[in-house]
Image (cartoon, rainbow over all chains, first blue to last red; front, side):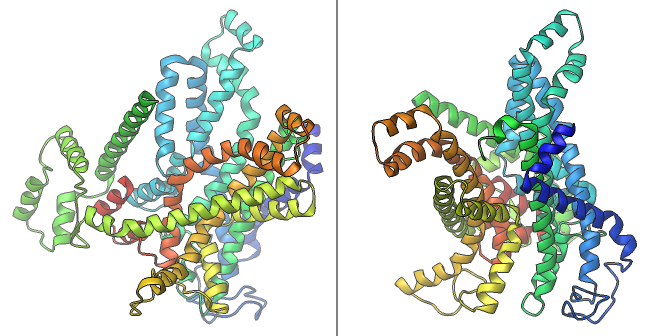
Length: 279
Length: 296
């Protein structure tokens, strides 16, 4: 484990990503306590430009709401949706991939066709349709992001399990009469974990992008402020008030960038064999 | 070869059928009785009319039969009727399709050309500042939401510099003809196409770079070098050609994702394509239209 952290910290881009992520998480968790302005309350005159008042550092939007407060509260929604929907996607993809890879044959065929089917549907279009039909809420958003993003997980896990299955220690476990379930859970999956972790960190980034795109289109949870919603709301007044769209967009950009960098850092740290090739 | 093509066609047909069936059940998931909703949208809500509607659209029949009718309708290009726009869904989509094809094809070309070019340059100069610069640019574009790039482009090129028109397909009321018309559409096309193009460019650039560095270390490149071939020839003929295989595969997989990008960019730039149509359907809760676009 210390080896892992050493690798992670030696990698400059991974380190930058980690720092960004820690700051974002800190703001999301502690921000609302330090910064009590509600993102929905009118605090100043509308269209107050940024950097004019220290209490409202990033200005106000068309309804006089604090842009900075919106960004802080929006961080909660973005990070939470990113994390939860990735976990949900893993909960679908890992078992499916493991079963397909372990049992092979017809089961594998059927499950992989099923996965391919979901992979051929344009993911964003499917997510839009799902959220629109299930009615926008935090649950339908998480569910639809999970539904469109599990196929790569299933494929990755299947590939890993397929190659691990023929290893001697797995064969040994089969011979000693362990149940398939026990073997998958205790012998195979722990060894297939590292590429899944890397993929998961990149999936959180994609999920945040998806969530922001959905709320930009007006499919966000109407009770929660999010970065995508703020950009969408500021879009119509972009000529008068650039700051309403610029800052939340920057927040999305920076956090997604941070997650991607962490993903690459994890990849280098967990697969040192690949890292040396300089990519 | 022929059997391979046939196999692919059969596979494609099965996927399409599955999407249609999925679609059918998605409609059933939508809240409310469709007949009541339709009656409301048509402006009349009495019981007789609702029953009539139910019979007309076969909603009183058992579910499997409804599914059969639905599939039959789609196979004959009948995607239902949009009550909001008072037009058949298939006509609406056909009207909008050319604009989206123009946009996505241009974006696709931009992303591939720029991506491969930048990726090749980065691999060529691996480890230098130029490589770092290209990698950083690719990383940033990869992490930026499409709709935000679009808005920033409008801020920069339309609001601040006033170089490019910020919305639409052509200048309304100008009625350009011939070459002037092409130029006009082109000026409207640049920003939306670049917005989608740059996002995918980032993916292709990163992939080309990684793949070129990988191919470079293979034995046949060493052989070529030993034969005394010039570096340029090796890079172009041997390395690039082989390195492009995974990039092209990925690009093929992405062609569907482009539509998702089109929804966002067409919304921002008011581009009259099916992405914008989907957004309008979304705003008006026009499920027939929304699912029709989805099938296409």
